[in-house]
Length: 434
Ligand code: SF4
Image (cartoon, rainbow, N blue to C red):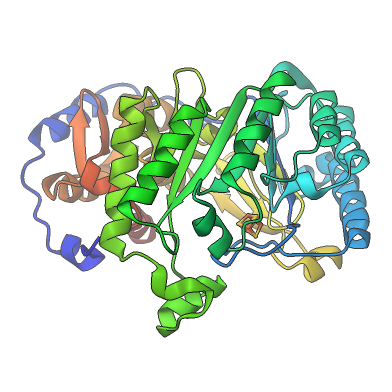
């Protein structure tokens, strides 16, 4: 983790001839029309920015609010869902496909009352054609899964639950403000299964205060033993947007900041998770995500493979095909301030031109272990679309951050640890080519 972007500035284009040959071969193939995302099923995201407590490491647009705020917010979200087609037309998007994934995230959607959850799902099903086999996920905080809530989830057609566990070690969970104990998590997983929801994700964070190599192994042991088919592992983010991050940057001791492992230990924990989960039959498929075969998150794959999605609520992001011929897609998002969102702040929108779409295909697709298939990019966007990116791909391959595999390129283990710096290179290329 001591590597920096400046290290990569010095890389030379050298050892990537096979990759270059692949690109040359692809260049000689015909250039089809662009418009990759037009016929794919839609994902619906709904943000519920409310939590029972604010975790010290949290840098999301979520907070603790009274139940009267919930009521107004749910009404607003349902109103926006009912008016989705008008909004999409206003931003120049196209909404033509049925829905094959719904994701309620936040925040902690499970803090809503059962009636409020039912109202949101009813609004979605009223406005959109939801396919019978759709993946329907709700993020839940362990300790909130009452029998009534589980009944409501089943009634709403929820078939996947994501649990924000973060650590199975009670001292670590308590230190960052989580309210659950290991025992609670295991008991709630059992009750979800009994109710028929066995597609469960568990979030873990490497680098929490008080975490040691041994305690991290305890969390990994528990997550494997739980039988959950999907695990997300994040490294603690240290930035000005969380209380713990600010304290760490200031060198203080509040929020147990002085018990946060150093960045090398955190990176080691992440690598240990990759190994342990793979050995347990839960291989990595994305930088932070691991799944048993058949259990990769359909909804999240939409973000990384540029399939269309439509978001509702606070700080909700959308990407849809564009109705304008020269524009490949339109991205738009709502405000991340509840005050501004509630006051009707305008939607922020960005057109995605074809070359920018190619660059997105790389820096999003490279998050996946399978990488980016150069033949597919050429088929979707035309072979010439790869030319501006060749120097970047060459530099990163020579530096050991990317590796060719057949007609694809993908991150190496080193590239995965330094993925933000790698993706920045593709963003820089985008700036240069515009
Ligand atoms: S539960 Fe999740 S969204 Fe809520 S404060 Fe904690 S980390 Fe943030």
